[in-house]
Image 1 (cartoon, rainbow, N blue to C red):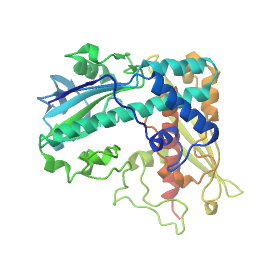
Image 2: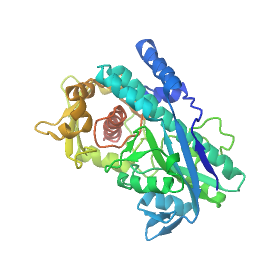
Image 3: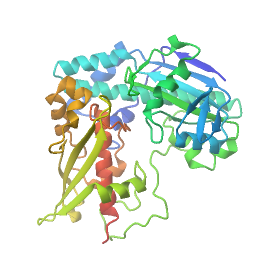
Image 4: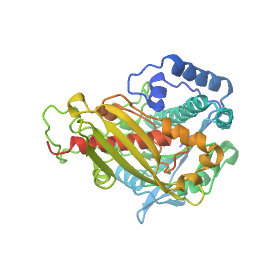
Length: 406
């Protein structure tokens, strides 16, 4: 098992990946002010950014009482446990990557100087750096595995579905055990990392290469976007297909893709469409939708908060064009005042939330092709988490309409 400690990894963010994280549709080209900001963020980071990556191999990985034990420490993640168990993984790499503290400090300075555009583009570039680092680190591990007749599984991290972020501190202890100075990170009681543009991850390793080939959910290549990798066994597939046993209504010439690929499970979309979504047809043929979001702050003991999303869609025959959309705290709900960014920025944060209208003016069906950051945090502090939530809202509306009776 190898150890990687790279204090100056190459960072080459592909334009398509940056555009995706910024929230633009697939194939979009930045122009005008957006291109100027994108070029500025890239240039600033090239001159001032200090990324790093660290990985070390550990043996003796085992599944015990429904949990996974890594380097003698027990972690309770049903999904990670099942993945490692199904693949027969008995080893793993524990990994930490970071875009460095400089980017976060500069972004905060831009925010304090009332420059939210520069703040946003720099923050998103930091997210792109983290994705790039974990992807290229995974590719290096695959290179090692190729000579060992082994396979490296897709990475998984605290804060992902079925793995509480509260275990982030324990994973950091495991990663740092032999060389603390090689992993210059801190972790808050909430599980958040500092610098925040950082990621901890586990890559399982299995000798049973035959097991990962027929199982899509175990194939590392299916979930790896590193295009030039010479060890690729299968094409990259970001979205999941709808299961064949889920009925989809036949609506004739529907403007919505039938059996669409969503970023979350159909079970979740079905529940949200029944419990959190209200659709109200209007006399002019448009459709008013209201989605109720319930989450918690990432600080202050996880105070509950509630936001309402309002979306007005055009007529069905016109492709359900997104005519208007807004997001604001529910009436009489004050949970948002406990968010850390609200405490720092106050009305500036709320203005940013109110101004964001992803896919505005576009047909609703573009939501199934819109790739955006995956940030399941319950709060609204970061642009990535807000885009993530807008994606869930629009996917729920799409699912409800696509599966409605004709």
